[in-house]
Length: 250
Ligand code: 13P
Image 1 (cartoon, protein in one colour):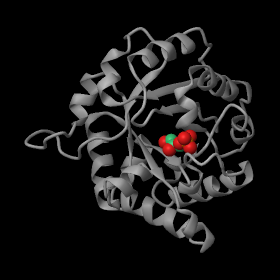
Image 2: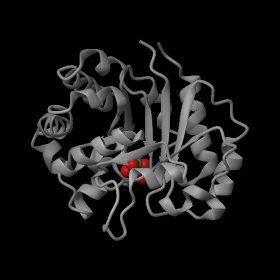
Image 3: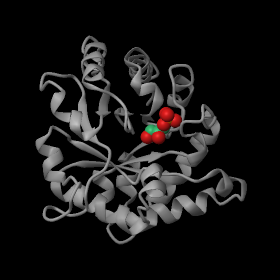
Image 4: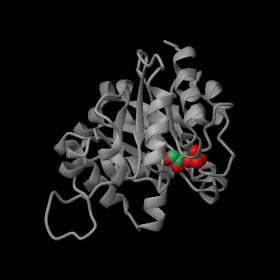
């Protein structure tokens, strides 16, 4: 089964109006027919992107509520109005720094899908969990929390495997390690919906850069990347987007 590749930029709390312009300039000339490209800037910058672009926009989180007295929060509806079509849900930084629980992540993902945003569910184990050989257990728990009771959401989701020990460390998972884990994730997802599990895009995230991306994209169950640091460099991010089109596999 051919899954169209997706390369997503997560700017985190970085970027500027100038980077919006530079990224748009870098991506516009690229032939991006065989890949979906997505930029997730801070929400305040969503409106700065021109409507004329060859890539999609996403938010980095959303409220599980649809409106009301939730100071500082942003609803799916507000994000859609600002131009987002995707939203990252359950990034490890939010799980850790904003105390987002598995249950909250599940609620946010459901809210996103109901509103018409495509959620990118982030899952991943810590270094300690990997060393204790608990990787599969942790990933299964994070997936079960979202999909066991709402399996219909899988067909509308993207899942990103981001091992916490590889995020921002310069130490990417090896292509073999990442493939092994992605295969486990896809197999686990088949329990909820076998057909959706074949079609769901699985992104790898964690120190992806222009040098290591091609080998990752060669792996059967890696359908693209969620890129942090390297997505702040327009030329390098453009190279990553092109690498996935060159390494097309079936
Ligand atoms: P880095 O690419 O900087 O490791 O970040 C990965 C990430 O967290 C993307 O969501």
